[in-house]
Length: 498
Image (cartoon, rainbow, N blue to C red; front, top):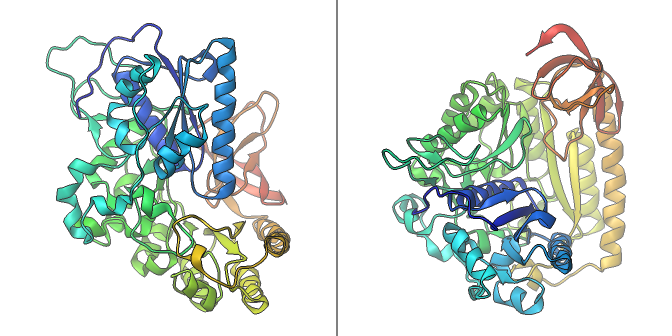
């Protein structure tokens, strides 16, 4: 990487708008670091920027629509004279490239992942009226060897977003370092925090080797590549120095971490090391594949001090027939056995999942089996999604499609059940002692945060009584006294906070 730290360039302010998942959050912070190191000033509001980067999501139809709407809203701001340019990056831009550029002339440029290392130069070209040609999408899985163990040597020429670092400062250099980017000497983290909260995502890996028939992510995110443990630990220490108290490990499939580095159980080794980083109070693993969640990993997550006993398991369905058509494995009994094993080691463990209803060929019996599983599983949170065809996926070619109106009805039916079940699970936690990471403090109001069983943004919150007593980033031990839906209210245990 050739970026160097330069003085801020007058008239070159950039705002980043991030959509989608926590992996995109990390990508945006990487882009912010590259831009600041290249003389750009990162600002919070698009109306204050010369250029706006919209980091898009391309996962499902609703996410694509949100991305398009956000790009159009940013483009509308140009009527006030600022920003001068709106640029699409991220998954939607990578997935559709020249097609997106043709259908959305309001965007001044559409850039793919390969443009990220030179993002400052790309923006300068856009503002100068010479935008780079939008890329032509291709299957990114073909950039690396099929065999995972052959990838590390090939990766330097094809590093995906979220991997790598900025070079060390030249000896004797007096160039100022943008605040919050990285230390002034030695390897420097390729990241600039855009959210100053006490939680931060930390990327384990990029890409996916699975071939789920409904999912297009591997084609535009590429084959699975693990980041090396030393790089992850270095970034974890940097995040802790920035005030982060909870690390949320993200990837397309965290269960696969290390398989391309020659150790399929490397996550079991890494988790205790991350939990031991000074300043880190909690480490949370997300995006686990049930078929790859081995007993040794369950044991480490459930039993390691400082690692949240939290299982974000991507079940997707529970009918064996539907799962086979999805090219996934398992079913109700094996999934319940996995959850039981985790709860045997950590009875209060949190568990969440996502499910898809209306997959081609799904019968009433299949749906009833999913409902049976959800009833028995006692999950803390469940996302319910209706199936939709995604271009380039195997499922889009399947017959036995279910009518959209019927899919919507099934989503509503399962969502009602999930709402009832997760509320019951929250009520079961009344009387439980929880540790709440305080994330929001408003004058005169109870503090709001998340207990160990609650992942960021999707799993509900816990409020802790005692207005004026708490500060953001504290970990407060409290007793749950009531529940409303998936949200909890807790009373602090005297003296039990840090």
